[in-house]
Image 1: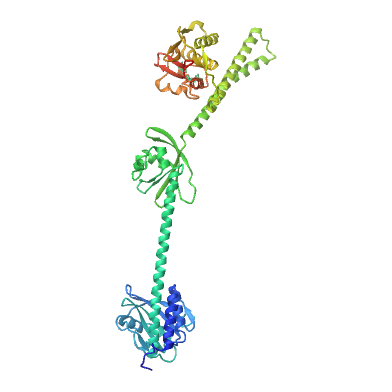
Image 2: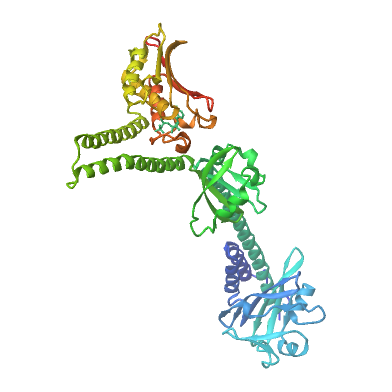
Length: 546
Ligand code: ADP
């Protein structure tokens, strides 16, 4: 064995330079071990290589890389060994002293010291010594791997015959030093890429969250998030618009601040998991004195329950109007139709001889009911056209007094007592601006109502008032309760027929009258004290006024 150092010889210098370059280029820790082993190649003869790490925290020595007789062996097959502080095997000694070890008497040592040794074959079979017989290794070199002065691993080189020399240990040590540096380098790089990837992922997540938040602000559905404590954690623009409650007044507060009856609502809103689409439920909700119909869906999320809702109040109202319409119209049509059908059937009977006045009575009934039918149809059609906005009204100069007189004349034959309608027309009433036919229609409807609901006497007055021409139709009937005074102008609204004792109607008359008056630039209002009759007042602009 030569005592002079081999590190200076040209072959070894070349080897180490190559090693430094090749190992330095390797970026994956696993690949560094393979490279190291390739470099070791024939320079230092061996039958086995084991790289172990040592973790000072748990005191365990773990195999990281193993190569046996031409084969890589799965390092996890070799069980982790505890560091033996007292005596112990060769590895423990290297870790404790931090000094390399060269042993050419491995067989004896393995038998004598109290370390744990394994024979590992090239198929990766691990068998403990001495149970598995004596050690297959004759010579071994072990070199510590250090980081900042602490031993963090051991690299072992073994041969099954022959011995190792001190100069081989020197070369081996130098290569291990370079390998350790390369592994550290590769690990640092891997750690850095991991951190960079994590940072990029965090940035992407933040961007996605920001994007989602922006989307939430612009979607038409109101969205809010309730945390486990029932507090509002998120409140978007649409939620502000529908509830009239700003985010600042909703966020971080109990949801019952916004929806006082939340507990009852929540019981009726099924909460779906993200996988299945949630069924929407439409519920009546009172919000600051307003009655709304809100359609809710709810989905459970990691941060709580996400609720989305939209305001279906107007759709709901439309639905109600539609069903009111169908109910009223079918009811209103049925009465005259039944009468017409009955009278016609009677007239068609062959077994009865009708006196002429009887036949006339039946025919008159058919005529009256048929005209009622066409009136109902007219009202419905007119309402639809008013709603669509395709009704044209004239703005001509109109003598309202004359129109009122004509309306009274039209109505009089239908009254039991002709004298019951009193008409007063002031002397100096200027012409109004409007549509003569439409004004007539409004007046007939008001007089008809006054007679139908008001009873015995009706007074009509036409006068000039502040740039308007005013027509007041007053009756002495039961009047209209305060709460009903606006509602009677709604489409299809009818007062309680029990109370008004009046025959049927569509509930469209006043709606149509008010809409027509408005389109002529005027207004229609009611003044009534319950029990003291009602006064319906039409005001039309004077002709020739801007
Ligand atoms: P209809 O007469 O077909 O019911 P209207 O729109 O003309 O429809 O009237 C709506 C409701 O207003 C009536 O059902 C009635 O209850 C009430 N009403 C109208 N005019 C009078 C009146 N002069 N006095 C009392 N109630 C009235």
